[in-house]
Length: 86
Picture (tube, rainbow, N blue to C red):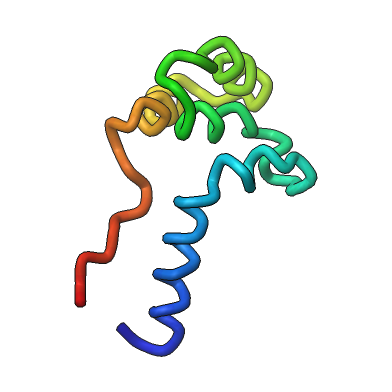
């Protein structure tokens, strides 16, 4: 996989396993802006719809971006593929 590849896979695995805990910690600047979008992805479907819409408005996403984000939130698409090698 190349130099550092194993670490990247581990970090992706770690992030996926700990995502709700990491995201809930709002001190990470990136998550202050899109907190509820990420929480919605890992929470119960539909539980955070109002909060997601509020963040989409706050961030001024256009319609195409909103549709993409909603697909990701609903689990229709994944942004990181699992590494099935080994």
